Length: 200
Image (cartoon, rainbow, N blue to C red; front, side, top):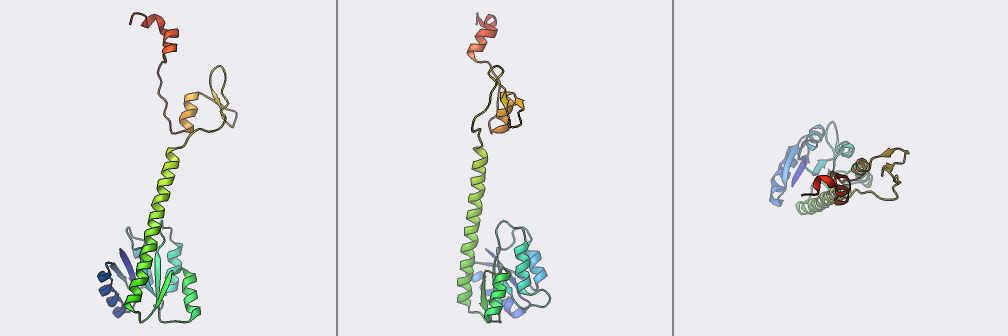
């Protein structure tokens, strides 16, 4: 699974780039907030991001806010790296859209555990999204006519809710997944075409 690294500090980036593959994550490194946002909008973008809170220009909190404004099927899981350990700073990051935070200098085992939590959540979201798609497909496939259908006793046209009358085959086609083909039943064949089929 890809993990975005957004940190202006070269040493921090290199440390993360070296340890993530050991845990079977693929690092995607960026040096600033704008670069991170661009990477997160690419096809097959990382679903997990480790973002430094303090950066020149766009800081980590602002990156979180902009990530949450993106129209994506699966929300990104964001871990905020911070040297600011005050409750106020942590709350600000979480309210901006971060899912978790870890203090610098970070403990590698703690980071691994937090990444694994993020991975589980992303995988659950992907599974839920797939189930929702399958459910919608099932609903679409099982679209059917229900309720009382007013039908003319003579011509068998159907009256819709706007008091418009439609041929039965047209109404069925427009209001269900069924497709109508035309043929001749045995009774009608005998009644209307009896002479043509008498010797056959």
